[in-house]
Image (cartoon, rainbow, N blue to C red; front, top):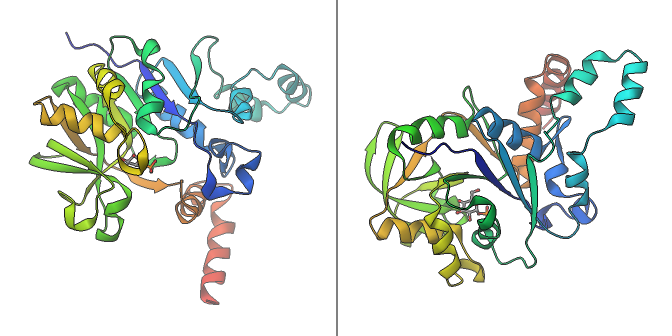
Length: 293
Ligand code: G1P
């Protein structure tokens, strides 16, 4: 029997330099799309995929992120008194059970692979998911759920995959694809942020992974890679080159790169336009503003 994926790692130790000065005092994962922090979208997606244990790899200055998941009895009391039942319901939907979240500190910014490795003791000998909250995916079935359904059939290691423009290739982990079967891609190698001329394809890894526990051992032994950082991509690539099962999964959905200003703004507009309370007003504003450009 294949083991169920019930643990997920959320690497949230990054400095968020692209959003300075805002991120001087707010963790970037707390920045909102409309009225929900980025991290909430990742948590909701993980929950919908059956994740029960949420492991945050944090760093100095991320206190607001930990506070966000605390209970808010005072606030709830006030809302109850004022009869704001709808708001209360929304607030409750973000509640996390006591003990469901663990926080691990990454002492030094040594890269994504190192951040994931910091959670090794909590992962132990189980398959696990990794979600990068910068990548927000809007889809009919949540992206990680799509992947877990596929994983239940195939097992192995799986990364969310998407074709990117040639000029974007050097910003992503890129897959070397040997076979395509519907949404499932067989992968025999990966390269972290290669130059376009060295890239094995234009098929990029997006921030959703399902990984076998053996990846942790590979991370332990890895040398620094691209950008002098320990790269998750390098551990998965090693696994693939040694004949381990590595797949890409071309998910259904629209992905927003909320690690970039343009991506974050696009996501803000797209999510606001999906809201009944904002749609008409905002659409009209966009039309009028665009007409003046
Ligand atoms: C990370 C990974 C990269 C992946 C990307 C997806 O890069 O290292 O392989 O393609 O996330 O968003 P980052 O964007 O953190 O530099």
